[in-house]
Image 1 (tube, rainbow, N blue to C red):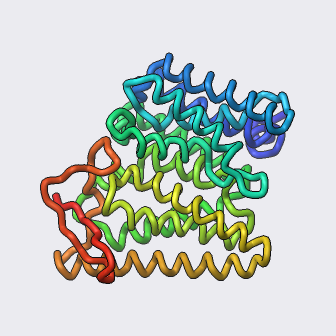
Image 2 (image 1 turned 30 degrees about the horizontal axis):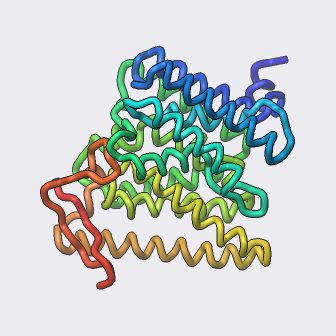
Length: 330
């Protein structure tokens, strides 16, 4: 059996191949020293998701298979979440698995378990839980880790036939970024050309269990994530905004799923309306800022290990006269 057949066909189940891919990325990143997470914290996280997923599956579905899905969630938590307290990893791992079985619509979970759990942990415990975008800066061992992400991520997307959705995200993200870019060239290195960006894209946003099945609806789904990111990054840390945008779009999936039960055209219609509304919000936000400051809002402005940074000054705009939007100035 050739390597090509193993990598690009269904010889290896998609879940197992994805676990292998992100597990290898975690292992390489840990051994090379770019991930500041201890082996004990990794064991706590993976042990918790495996045991919890096995027990929850046995209780709800009566199954006793090895929890590959839970393992996937645990590896995702180890890749992104950072804390000096092991209990934070235990809590996040437990929330990820429990939410997958409890928070469901029509016996299907609509949240990506690990990403939703990480976001909730960041919101609930901002003083002890954080993301560390600096671990992904290009150079040295980080370059090889990023190269591994790109190779394995591309193979994963090809196997799952999700290249179209990936391209929609990349083209729309880079298009808006280039239109609204500021004078900070490091934005490319610290926001786009990072492991966080591509892990979200290859193994998060395109999660087969939560991404819409229809191509045209998937395109709107990805576009909504992009638009929400550019709206949110003016208020919160831009690296957290990548996660927050995905969380909000998954929440929006609930009413869209219910609409789709009645009519696929009804869902497409309302999802298109929401997407257009988000685009109009972003246009208004950007133009309003440019009118008052003679430039678009800077892409890099919230650089810290918290959801909301604490600058000494901020610019405040009144969004359609309804509520204030804060833009942090450098």
